[in-house]
Length: 392
Ligand SMILES: Cc1cc2nc3c(=O)[nH]c(=O)nc-3n(C[C@H](O)[C@H](O)[C@H](O)COP(=O)(O)OP(=O)(O)OC[C@H]3O[C@@H](n4cnc5c(N)ncnc54)[C@H](O)[C@@H]3O)c2cc1C
Image 1 (spheres, rainbow, N blue to C red):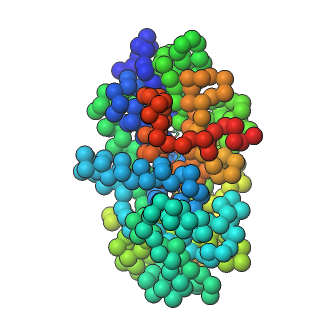
Image 2 (cartoon, rainbow, N blue to C red):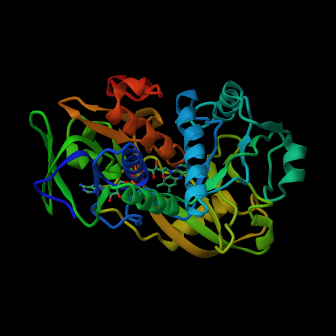
Image 3 (cartoon, protein in one colour):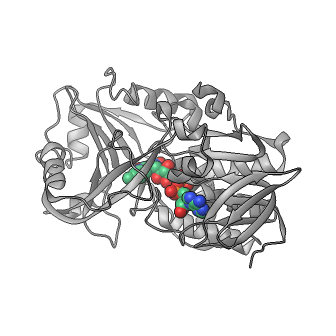
């Protein structure tokens, strides 16, 4: 048990996607590490729950992210081999839309950039024209005449709860301490260590890594409170009239942009042993307080989503809901990640890697952070695109 009084090499605050990965990597490097979470992870109160997350290596958000995703795939495969757990399913991913379209202003030229990043990093991919897309994946109906798709066969989805559980388990096995149901109240830096005030007492460490997701701004205040915005997202699972169409062997994960500025949705095949077809959109303006978020979803909200984005667009996905959940994005400007030392505390690293697309990068980000704490000279990742200075 922890450990007021004991001095750690590193304390990880928040054990969701980023924190679990960081704790695991710190423990692998032999650093005496403790991870703290206000809940008992994996849990469904933050950003890392809901059965599945898309993973793809031709990262349309930009080339700076790709090394994290590539490394994450390696780490998940290693963890699968070590533990016999299934963490990732490579059912492929399609980005549907039009390559020349400007697309979502938050993620400009997403289709074209996916292709460019795939070419830069030598990721296997193909461009499917409308006929090839419709022939190969009959799940997608109501296609626009100009629709085409970026197809990455090695992409797919990961199981977020299992990734967190397994990394925490392996972190413990390598000597790390996990402290659930404990809230970090304050972080201060003395010389030369960091003091973490928690509901279980004071903890001291050489370094702190804040991976508190939607709570980061509340915990740290300025300047993070003007940069990071939690938003409420809704995940829907609809009953399929023909469930076999949505088996992972037949259906890829997808991000589907609708023509004429019709917005976009993303979704998944139904994992074996699960029920319902999971489809969601992105709601980037509904800022919320993580301690006061509305977890209920109204019937009107669900019906409006189905008629706008599902009906006539996905074969045999009925309006009958099997499940609905809310989840939190933590948005940084430009849907970027923020990964940097705290401007006033040189031993406190802040990792806010969400903006709605962080999970696929999380194992690699944990590797980058632990590398930096273990031996900054060994840093193999370029973290400059995620520096605080870049946000102005
Ligand atoms: C609906 C939805 C769909 C998504 N889809 C995808 C996708 O398909 N592909 C993809 O790559 N990414 C996706 N993402 C993004 C991805 O899930 C996030 O980037 C990632 O989960 C963020 O992890 P995190 O560790 O930053 O936050 P979290 O997982 O929320 O972890 C933060 C942790 O900090 C703890 N904490 C907070 N404050 C304190 C405190 N004071 N003391 C102690 N503990 C504290 C919390 O309890 C929590 O466990 C999606 C996100 C959502 C919400």
